[in-house]
Image (cartoon, rainbow, N blue to C red; front, side):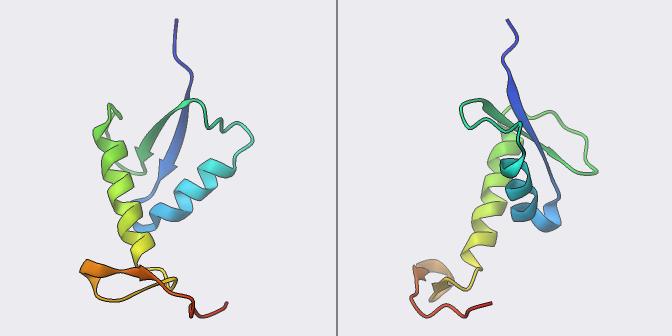
Length: 83
């Protein structure tokens, strides 16, 4: 039996957008395994690519304006600028 998976294409320079676009697809099923493909790179996701993408995503999230403080101690702030 072949396990069904979600495949999401992610660009290193815009990880969050790639993940959000993948999660928004009608075919995305949160109960299926998640595999990523880095755009322009060869590689099969056996777990390492997913860990790398999640690390890149967390680094990008920590730079969002909803967090404040030094890099080693970020906290959610209630004074995030509005767009």
